Length: 219
Image 1 (cartoon, rainbow, N blue to C red):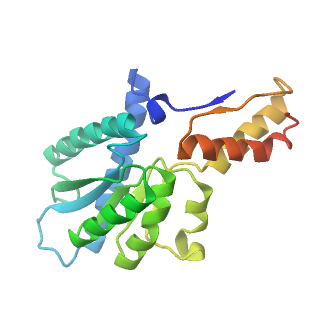
Image 2: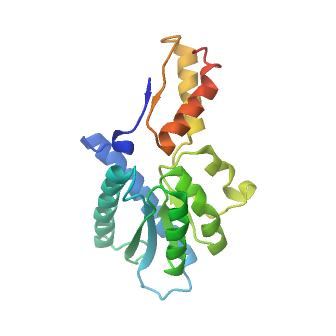
Image 3: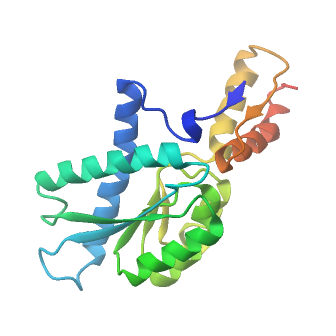
């Protein structure tokens, strides 16, 4: 049993994977655009909706995140040809957080200074968590479709104290809980070895699986 994502991120080696990646990015961008449009009454009517993008374009996630950025640029162009969002063009400002919490704080502050009205990212959980207070203080919505640390859920929404952080993907805990139910019900094997990449996703998934393995009757 292996916990891994191709290139440390998302595979786009086939049509199905490419469509899934496009769907994730499109959902994030359109949602960010809708949030921005609803919150952007201070901006001139018809002015571009400026959206910040926090990706890890260097460091451990560079390969997958560069692919994601390229897909995003393609979808932005496609969406703008259709009239944008709410009749306004989308404009993105891309920043590299290097999958590093300290750098994530730095570039998140730069996006705040640039007066973006919404942020897509950060995709590394540690970088995302580090950025959350900044976007909450600035009241700028931030949406991610990849960061999976359960703490993001715990710290978001009215209960978590941050109403500007959003996630459209399952957490490590949610994914592994589903896997545990499957293993406990189907019982395909009794013993497993965990092989995980050394990244936020790999470490988080491995720890989450350890927490459910016992309940599933797996050693």
